[in-house]
Image 1 (tube, one colour):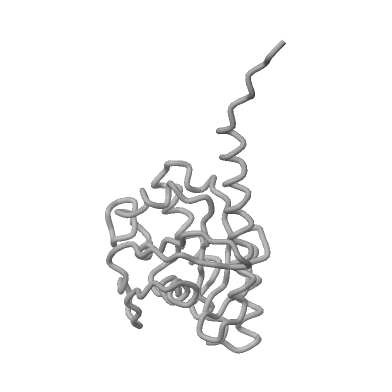
Image 2 (spheres, rainbow, N blue to C red):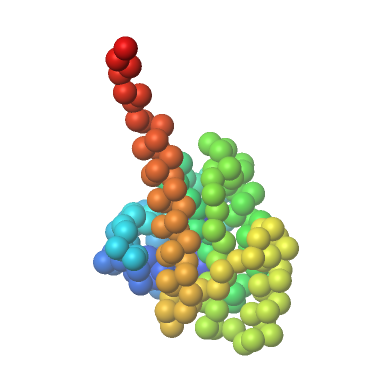
Length: 182
C-alpha cells in the first residue's frame, strides 16, 4: 500500500485482514510498516502498509521513504489516493515522483490505483476526482471506501490476480528441466 499520509491505507489493511494498525485522523499515524494476511476467493496474500509518502521523502522528509525497501519485494503496488484531497491527480503524482526518486525500479512494478474514501465526497466531487486521477495515472482507477466496504472486493480481486500471476511466473522460472534420457 502506498499513498500520501491519511490516504486510507491503514483503514484498508484493517478492513481486509486481522491486522490492527493504529488509525487516526492526523498525518503520520503509521510509524512502522504493518502486515496483514488477506484471504479472497480462497486465495491468500500478504498486504504491507507503509507510512505515507510526502513530497521530499526521497530527501529524508517524513517516514515513508525509510520503509520503501519493504516495497521492493512486493509484486504489486496498491496506490491509494483519497477522494477528499484537493487534487487527486497531483496527489498521485507526488507519490509517483517519490517512488521514482527512490529508484529500485519501484515505478516499474505493476500498480493498481484506487480512489479511496469515496463515501466522504458528493457525486460531483467524486466524478471530478476520478477524472483527475485517471488523467494522472493513465488508467481507470478503482473506487474504494473501506468505511462502507464499497469496492473492497474488487480491489482485493485485482490484487490477488496480479499476485497469483507473479507467483506462477516465479514458479515457472524456478522449475528445473527434467533430465533427458536417450
